[in-house]
Image (cartoon, rainbow, N blue to C red; front, side, top):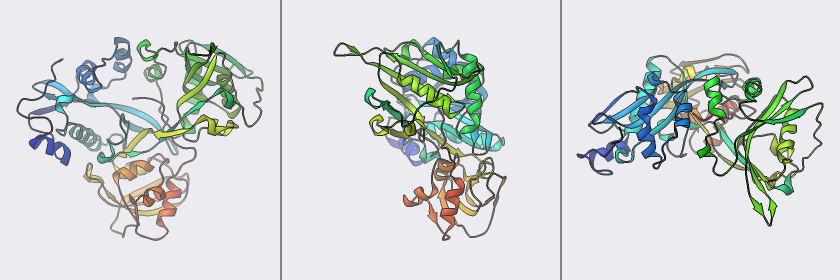
Length: 437
C-alpha cells in the first residue's frame, strides 16, 4: 500500500497521458477503478498528496467513522491505490428546507500519477453513478484550491468571511441586553447536548448547513493535539436562557502570546451559532471580553455575519472574503426543483454541461415564491444561456446570475429575463457551510 510510485511506461507531464489528463478525455491506460474497501486504503495516497503529513490515529478514527465505502472510489495502478474520492450521503438545507445532497471529499492523486486524468475520471464515475441510481440531485464539496473544480461543473455556491477584531475595535454599535442570559465555559464533550440542540435549532436559518448526526458532530468538535499549532485545547462557550435552555455556543481556543510583557493571547473562533439575536450578541460580547485575549479571529463566518453589523468599527476587523462551498447539479431538473425561489420565475435555460451530458439542452423552469417548482425539457427559445458551473453557483442562493452575466459567463437572450431570474435564485441570508467533509 505504501508503494504508489509512477508507472514505468508513462513519464509525468509528457505524451499521451498528459494530453489525456489536460484535454478532458478518459484516464491513461493501465489504471483500474473500483469502490473503496475501507478508509485505510486512502492513507498512503493522502499522505503523499498532502506533502507527507499522515493522519494521526485519532483523526483517522474520526473521519473513518464517517466513511461510506460503497460511495467512495479508488484508482489503482498495479493493484495499489493511487487516487481517491470519498462520497457521503448528506442532508443540507437548501432554499426552502432540507434536501439530500451528495458530499464529495478527499479527492486526491498521489504525485507520480498526476496529469493523467484520474481526478476527472473519478468525478465522472461518481456523478454518473448518482445520475443512473437517481440518487441525490446535487453534489457539493470543499476545495483545497479554488481553481480546480469549475472545469467539472462545480460553481462557487457559498463564501465565507474572515474577521480579526483587535482590542481597540471591540465596541458594539448598540448596547447588548443580557435579558437573563448566563454564560459557562466547558469542554465540547461537556457541552455535547447544548451544541447539538443549538445547531439543530439553527439548521433552517441558512442554506448550506448540514444535518449533523453523532459522527458528524464529533467531526465538528474534533480537537486533535497535532492540529492546535501551539494553542490550547478546544473550549466551548455556552449561553443559556433564564430557564436553563442553551441559546448559543461558540467553539474557540487560545494561543499564548505576549507583547511588551503584556498578554496578547490569540483567540481563534471555530464556529458560533445562536437561536436568537440577543444570544448571538451576548456570546460575541463574551468572546471579545475574554481575559488575556488580544486579537479575536474567526476564520470562517457567513459572508453576511451579524458581527459585521454589531461592531461599531467593522473596518478594523479587516473582513476578508474567500471561497467556501462548491456545488453542481447532478440532474438539472431535480436539482432546480429541490429548492424554492424568492420571486416568480418562468425562464428557459440553455445549459452546457460536458461532464454530465444528460443535462445539456433547454429547460423551462417555473416557480412561485416559496412554492414548488417545475423544470422540464423544452423546445422553446432560450432566455438565458449558461454553463453547469454557473448553475452550481446559484443553486444555494448565494451566487448572482446578474454578476455572472457581467463577467460574460451568462448570456441574456431575452431582455428582462436576467433580472427576473437573478432575483428568483438569490436567497437571504446567504448560504454557509462550516462543516468539513
